[in-house]
Image (tube, rainbow, N blue to C red; front, side, top):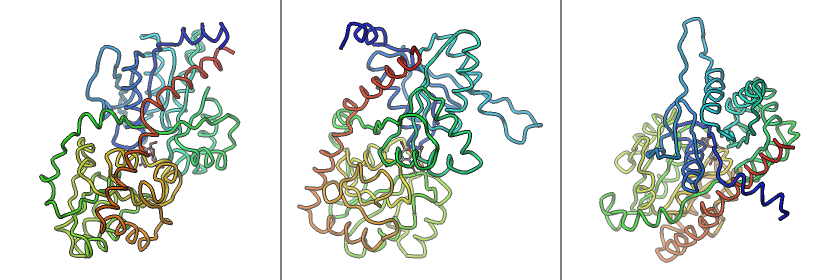
Length: 391
Ligand code: GMT
């Protein structure tokens, strides 16, 4: 490290960071919130700017703040202009709090609004670097739609630094967009120490008798999650192993899933819990996690399951193989191959010794994505962004 590097490092040791994200139960919002909390714990001043307080942001402290974006409703507008309200809020908040760096999660429309804010601030002589983190559907499902692609391409190319949550998403980004920027892979993370401290006893007996296995699925119940496959896998498994299925989340496919359970005669064994703030407790007493998604840039929820010691039976879509290691923390199958998923689930559930081994492997694999490994990578990215800005 040269003396200039040391000075630069010191200068940006503690930063004032604005985080823009979706405040919902979706993976990108959860990740952005956990990152903000972790950065604040490391001494940075963090400002969340979004339309609602993020679901995982329970505690606001002296160096963690939330600024709500209000969109005034006007009857002329068929679509209310959220991007406009967000970019104005960004300009005001950045000026008021002397924010030094902007980190937007999920390109649409956050990178676009962030770019506009940067331009408005530049008019006033304020330069602020913007880091854009791509999360998945902003690239693979929504962003690559021809109606959005030009704006998303522009926003990516005009970010100071771009990150993606997996190697697979990076490859998708380069394939689907004409990207002129380097895309850095910074994986999603989990706070393993927090889990170990909070969940010494998860009181499993409250949920199921000792001889019954608990299988879990958590998602936003969109089409890409292949909810029907979750039910079909469970239907076959419960014929051989006394078990119950916990379905956590809300979304368009939920009603169909409930109907399918009725049709298959397993409604009494499948519990739909809706959105929950108790994901950690539920995963703590889960024996197995199902994630048969059509596409998944990373599969944060699989990582959360593994950290709690629940092996994962999943598809091999997108970035899932970077998280769930076949034959170690669970098994991977081709998308839609329910039969193979059933076979793999039974391998684990029919042999307690094997299941225990996979549970312990899952915890070990999750350690690779511990917060202590990943948050410093973001700090490094921020330093890079400052260098781009000051060049
Ligand atoms: O589709 C979702 O599950 C929500 C979506 C989001 O952006 O909130 O999740 C994406 O981002 C997560 C966090 O980085 C990833 O773990 C998910 O794999 C990714 N979802 C998809 O790519 C479908």
